[in-house]
Length: 126
Length: 85
Image (cartoon, rainbow over all chains, first blue to last red):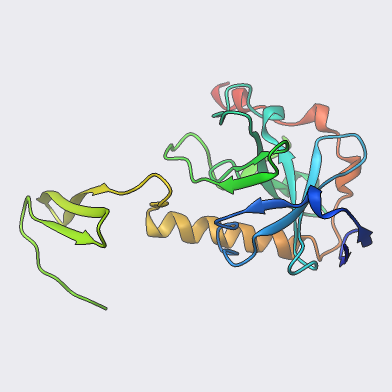
């Protein structure tokens, strides 16, 4: 398969790497199929829609931020990042993690019922 | 919109598997108990909206000129423990 993404141009991939979000991402419930794209060798990822390839969410692995972040069995937790040219204004959503099982190629988003985790958490200190 | 009036301890059934029960009423607040299958997501409306807005903002932010994600110094990330300092 082949899609044209905003971030990476045309990407060709095998359909067996598609990650299925049965319930979609909150606010984007109609989109179910995504590619998880790892940027270089760091813990930044892009969750890129296959159905609407111009839609891609930057994400960061949440284990970088909190060693005790709620785990889900066999899933990795990611937070969607709001980018900014000023790194001090970059925020990550800790309230609504995206959980992905990279073996079964499935994922879902949760909203945590805890005030400990804000929707906009500043990624860097001033 | 379907509008129903319920009293304390009364329920509403939605389909065969979802029950919403009025557990307490006081000072302009209603406490609801919800029974639903595990695959049914239940959110407070305003939190859902907040999350949705943040996700839209994330998407729009990728279309602006931003710091280079791949060059972020992730070793300098603010750990959640910082908040207690």
